[in-house]
Length: 180
Length: 355
Image 1 (cartoon, each protein chain N blue to C red):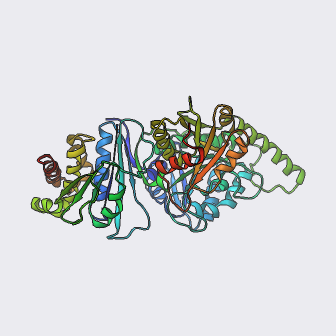
Image 2 (cartoon, chains in turn green, cyan):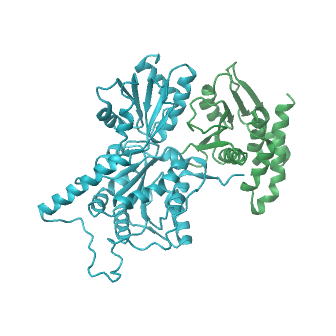
Image 3 (tube, helix red, strand yellow):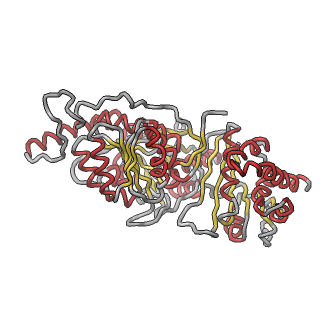
């Protein structure tokens, strides 16, 4: 079984971080994982994306032409990745920031007001976790416990206090897709 | 929990080199491998080694030459344009029989090109580069784990044959993260300098001299003949290949490094469609695993070479399989990395539906 996803948005939105979180959690569960960033002469505020593959078998290509799923943080990334998602794949997008609708009828599209939800939790900084939660609620390539377990790798020192709020943001994403 | 850690390729390869006993690193910054020297600058002092950021690539390769002359395990890393600048040094080191390791994170070219993944330095790595009749062993890992494991072999092969060993990767392997396990730790703390090293006389009755200058033609031809014999031996015993889904294959893709990894998914896609496709992946690109490939003559209906370059690997494939089976080629350059489906489409265009 292989799950793969592209996560895309602006640099600074925590795009790369939730990809790494997913990869760490997958590894801790004993799965095969790859995390591949877009890289280039990047600039602040420019677009950034990463591809994550989680599988039971050794992973061949870490390069995804047609990802099974995409988590989208901005319009530019929507325009880039919505057309290439695998047939009958999953599209999760922050409807607070992306006003467009997908024209593809084959996709399972989740329009989640992730930034609004995060702000209600205290800060738009948690938007990435809300979106990751929505993905995990839909696909569940790994357990929430593994994801929670990997949070302390990224939230160290003073940020340790933020683990609980990040868990709540993840859970808010899961809840949003579960109630539908 | 396993003993695996999630690491970026460029850092994992640096740690792999350290675990393999590398204690001296020289370099000059160039993307996409800057995480390697950065990591080395932090880690080498912790293990009693030294990191030097040189003033240029030319300085770095000659610092490596000097360090390796003392018999220690030492390396440089760079990326395509930087490796080009080092070719003179690589020829001198080869002409002096000094073992060392050079890593090239290949990027788009020619010239300054760009920093995206490419394999356009293949011919430079396996055939030429510097002047004169020398060879170096070239290892081409296709995953971070394999790269880490191969670093142990890289230093051992370098010392066994007193040759330069080159490890070629690309920005994709350098920038991605994968779980990696450091299985082998080579203890170099009690190593004695080898007999040929210039590390003090240690009671010998003669001083060792290391040079690549041999003015007498008869003597230099002798050197060359002796080294041709070494290279022939390396070709005979050190070539390595991965054969993936080849047991019942009608067709093969031939690819190495990152491209081979992507082609593995192509093989899976083809198999799902009923096409009996396999993958022949050279792990050593010099020595080229020619014998292993020739074993499939008469069994395969054709082979498609796929590379991030223009007919470079294909040159060796043609030398190996020319007239023995139908051969096809597909490649992208300039830093473009084709996906698995694109490779399958290229296969189907050239070999029909493969049935």
